Image 1: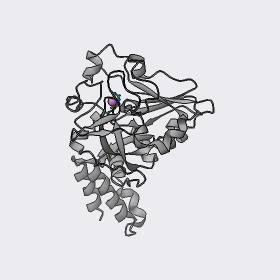
Image 2 (image 1 turned 180 degrees about the vertical axis):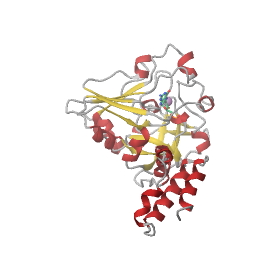
Image 3 (image 1 turned 90 degrees about the horizontal axis):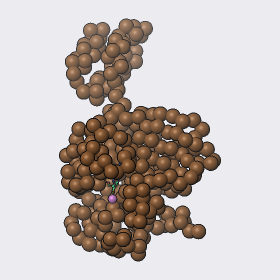
Image 4 (image 1 turned 90 degrees about the vertical axis):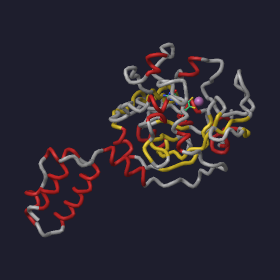
Length: 321
Ligand SMILES: Nc1nc2c(c(=O)[nH]1)N[C@H]1C(S)=C(S)[C@@H](COP(=O)(O)O)O[C@H]1N2
Ligand SMILES: [Mo]
């Protein structure tokens, strides 16, 4: 025993993955607590340098994603889009305005480690690492319709946690009426921020507190049972399925609680085409095209668009005057 346990650590130090190290450590602790060693346990503890390595927070995130249950409340009467399509046909202007180039350009993007800042009208402004935040939240999978303002659509199994739980954890002051979200500014890592310099980078969006704490608003950290790939907004993005896709800001760094309605990216760039609410509405055409139908991205099939993208019963009350 005295010889065997330290050897396990030496092997782990020679370059096994954090997961192996973590599991070895668990085995070791289980053996140590089995009783045979009694008061000698401390002598067997690994050096601080080895202990500091594990378990990595990102590994803990992966383990939590794998056990996130699907929420049966959210069913869609259409097939789930293939993962291949959902992760290779993307809108993400920080990388490119060409949808099938985004995933390639996004491969080298550093989406971890990632600090999130919570500020503005909150009891206590704070910063938290994304994996620490994920550890604190109850993850679930939700299959949602996903409708871009350009009139293509998908059905995606997202994994995340309700924004409502996050807002409660932020503890906003009563004067806070909106949640403003801001993405990253890293022109050295992303081509779009170097080339399309006329856009007001970084991407920024906002919701009313009522929208943000509605049951549907989801902060997404994974999809198809894995952590989100960079092109879909790793490490954390918003999904508001009753709104056009552009409200679903990717790679969020800042959440700011404010009193008056903040400016938003697309509404600032083209105010006559993209409004603040951006609720899916088949009877209100875009100035340049109809919104009555949508093209299923995977098949090319044309189907009718539903009011609030099919989520009327969850959100229509928010917009009654
Ligand atoms: N930061 C950032 N977030 C963004 C965008 C973007 O260009 N930058 N595009 C939006 C648009 S227009 C859509 S339709 C969705 C697309 O999400 P998906 O690629 O995961 O399908 O992301 C939204 N979030
Ligand atoms: Mo979009």
